Length: 158
Image (cartoon, rainbow, N blue to C red; front, top):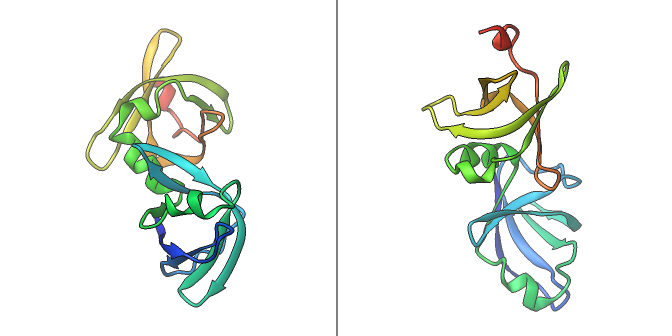
């Protein structure tokens, strides 16, 4: 989901002014993701000071005007948007480990299938390829390359 857009620099210490979309993004403990050179990069807030639909922000490790300038004009997304876009870019989810809430570690993503309305990742379980729908993903940890999900009952028996 599109969270907002970085509008301009506000000071010399990496402060930025961003436009926040409705409903107001309130989960500032979670990262937002910005696409830089074709890659999704997570940014954590060091400062998040709302002013209506605008917000004064500083991202961790971006406390200089020069670094912050690189983000002006960039859109900020939450994880669901990344999941959707990742489905159309197979290399971005390749080798992620799929963790089921009941069964634990299911294996690594070997393929990504961009079926309209139902993108899936393919993993091999007991020598058989199983397709896991991306729509059911509960959490994605980019740094650890983990996908958390609860697979639909009976899926492994197909």
